[in-house]
Image 1 (cartoon, rainbow, N blue to C red):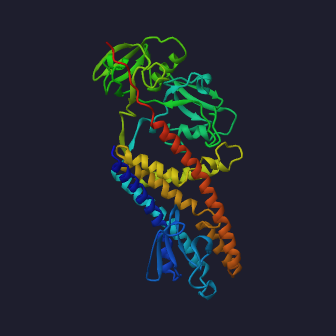
Image 2 (image 1 turned 90 degrees about the horizontal axis):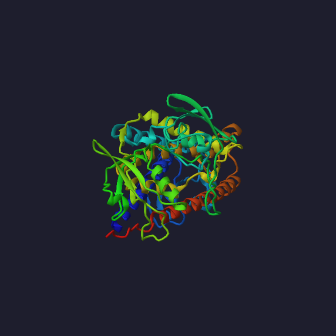
Image 3 (image 1 turned 90 degrees about the vertical axis):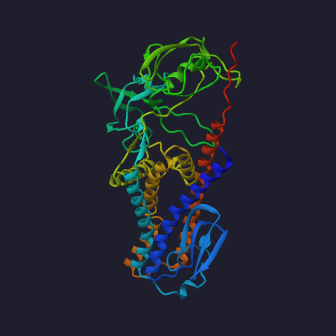
Length: 472
């Protein structure tokens, strides 16, 4: 791909991110104008402005720190360290009622939520790509050395419940997914009810934790399983055993050595087993159109990279050949997003949970998700769907009763209404500035791990090309 392609995608991400922030701040801005508050500045992003222009007494600015935005309202709780001093001293401005402050504070989350509903209606009409993992709980692969295998789970088993919670799909992560129920489980063991050959059975697995380095997030719980998906060949290396056997794009591998497989990971596993032992022939049962036949292959080491294990030479698999467009209603989308936010908050605040704030994602992760979605086929549909989730998050998290956030403004305004006098502007500014520093520090903390994840992922994507020696 050309560099212009990547630049174009990056611009799409920046524009969309700014749209979400801008709509939220526009809510505050319009409500402030409606209720007669003085508006000093409308800013997207923080920091010293790299662009600004004054129109109608309001300074419109673009900062250099891509971490949000703000509307400078000196009659509300101010943050002079971030927003700068007002041109007019607060003492000289008319008082604003607690109700007006509540309306202005609530308008931002309301606009974000409205944008989520708008996107949800679009998704309802145009559809969202859904793969097999979105609708199945059937296991496609089990690590032979992992907790699930030791507990008795095998490929082809269908998971019904995890710790008595009904599951409906493997991913994406949501309250009723296998992934979420495993990582959010709190007991020493995980109780899994599953279906095999029409019979319900129970497995008890002790979760596994991958070792991590200091610059990585703490690993979440795993039992080392993967969802079922078709093993359809997407790319084959030249001169490889797979190429010499005649495997081509679109061929589906349905069995290895006579055993039915439920995921391409079964073939990766068979290759890895040969890295520490003798190289044995593998008989692949291949489906090509309506035809089914066996191909026996002998794995070999490629000449590049030199440290490779014996391989068949199948470079890539189609992620899913059964991608369908689903049309979830706006209510379904909003309900799912709201439910997942509350489930996440409940999980990270539970003393028994291993999921902590370190596992949350910030602006860098959001940009990375959007970047990856824009590159995928039907990515614009996925972008719309993710924007529903993100805007619901933006609306509800901003309503948390913490200083700096909109919920904090609402709480202070309610306190003002009860006391019948506002909190001291000096005290309020100190509280706001202190909490702003804490939140910015937290965002930088999360950004460090987000960036670390992205760098390691990009490094893994730049793996050396696999080359096999020509056969005479």
